[in-house]
Image (cartoon, rainbow, N blue to C red; front, side, top):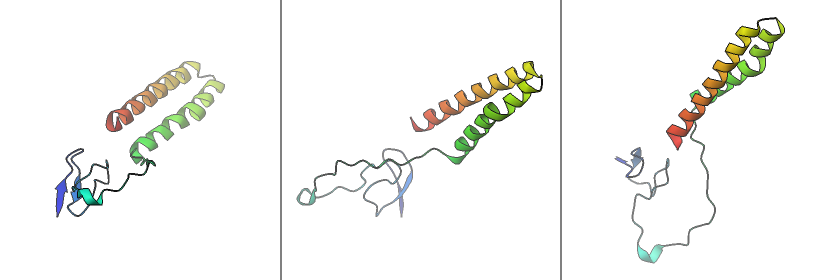
Length: 101
């Protein structure tokens, strides 16, 4: 049976000890079985593939398309494309921060 995590709201099995997405404990542990927590912290990357694909696309534009435009004499177009790619990269970083911050 699936239950909702009290911290992040994702669906989690009622058999799970903690939420796999945020790590929020779901079941109470009896006082006699409490074990000292390990100081290690596991970091799980949660950035979606769509964000990663867009970041790659903007960097391809910045590193390859803009220089081609500049070297072929399209200075105005190259500057415009560069500005739009940098703005796009900024918005992607804001989107990543917004979803995971």
